Image 1 (spheres, rainbow, N blue to C red):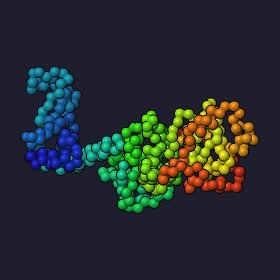
Image 2 (tube, rainbow, N blue to C red):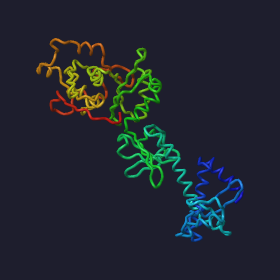
Image 3 (tube, rainbow, N blue to C red):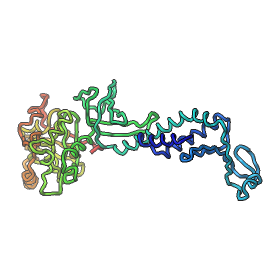
Image 4 (cartoon, one colour):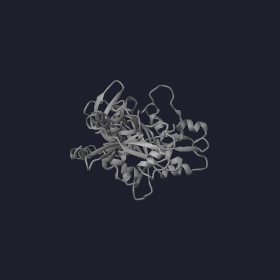
Length: 406
């Protein structure tokens, strides 16, 4: 051994980011393996590698016992005291057993083991780096595709984007740059495996944190997200600062902020509504861009009955029920939408005595925030004006689904 090894380990530490102690430990373990394999030795041995002096020594280790049962692993107390009178039962006696021709054979055998240990250390570093980035957004480059998955290069590791986590309206080509959300990092025999998503609600949350400074610094909080990836999403926002408009902060000047996010998601439409602890106001906001006449709340089963004008029924329901479905998922409340005519026939509208709900809805206008920042009540380009099927869609009962990702 020479100083060249020390220089090589120092360079490896700088290039790979692996501690020199880890490499030395791998070399010592490899030398022990090489000694036992090439010299047919089964005893317990230890290798001492001194980089500063450039020396390598092999020591056998034997337990001090009264009666020896295995001479390869044990030594009698009498023999141990002959070496050093201080030895007692249970101590370990070390004796140098370095073979003369050990250097060449050991180096040849240890090379593969050392390489494997270094590779494992590198994989460990990569795992530690990416496991801390779970639930975070990263930039990647599409490297290849197969029948099921898309593989995205993240620099040191190749991430898997399963078909179930891809936006159906997107097409990917090699060398495309995309933003992905890390959902899971696993240890495997082939190294760390990173799984990413383009459909996870967390991706939308992180994009807003990147685009909206008020969300990043905590002034505005995203309370919940309901997403149908590639088509439409709704988010609810809230702030305790009376001087800040939470919805306007997310929309940006002339809709610039939300437009940037929509472009990143291949044109996915994003509705931004203001959160409220009052379910009447929250449900009404969540159904935007439709106007709401009345909201009746049943606290026991977390259900609401919403009355909307006849001409806005299809707008409240949305294409294939999407608007009402997203609103139910966003609020966590069951939503039963009825037209004004049906509500009058059922005797649930207009309110007979208590006008507090009507006043609360009036005081908290329901805004339909579109990408250009305008308020649109009757003409939303992303909704059909009429239900798709001929059947009467005057009433729809939608049950909220538990959204663990919000």
